[in-house]
Length: 306
Image 1 (cartoon, helix red, strand yellow):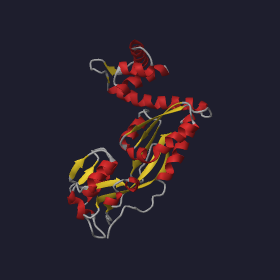
Image 2 (tube, one colour):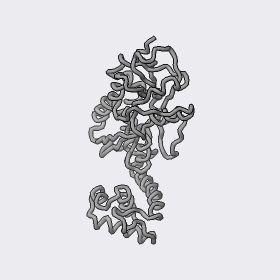
Image 3 (cartoon, one colour):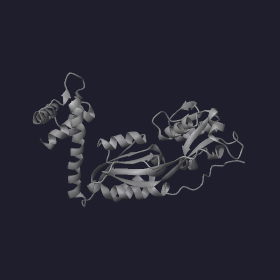
Image 4 (cartoon, one colour):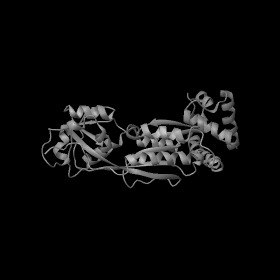
């Protein structure tokens, strides 16, 4: 078996296309096909179903693919091990939740580029669960994501805590005048939330379900500021990370509701493989730049009314 053949197979499965894999590997399509055939001959099994378009892995191919991912991670780890002291260059593939991009990347990325001018940082955003899957599949070098406290992670990953992020239920300033509420007191107003896949939404849904309450969704829409503007307009309740509320242009028109039975907090963490080689220093520097924005969150400063 050759590493090049394994890499070709992994890339075809990941790209779901031989032509796309050829572009990634900078090879011709026949060359990619030959490498996969060589790998199949070495194993004595058929890995791709050629009767489907695009070709999909067979049942055995799926099992081999998972094992090949481990092999490629170890190979990459060896490469990084011998180059860990080299000046970082090439690309850093980083995945972040949108909140981190909105709050911290505007300052952090220019600092990173200034310190490591030969490194190209490729940033993509997504839900935390999707970023985790991409990291597992080797599509990302590192991810910064939000998860419930106490979550376990694969042993082969480095997990750096960057802070805790409180979530707050938000309403139009004058709609809820009392000093204290419970979730059941306000849930019927309806919610303005991100679509399915959002960790904030999942946290709210779990609590509502635990209390036997239905989740009435008034609007599903992307964008923190857009959601908060709609909440300020009385279209429903929002669930927002406290750092985003503190920075919102709508803050004076909102009230963060004091709920005695719903005070969720999520952990913000950076995740990457243990063997990351020359990317270790840039990731350390990036984490150092992002952490101050989330490490300690002061009490909510959105006006709470009386």
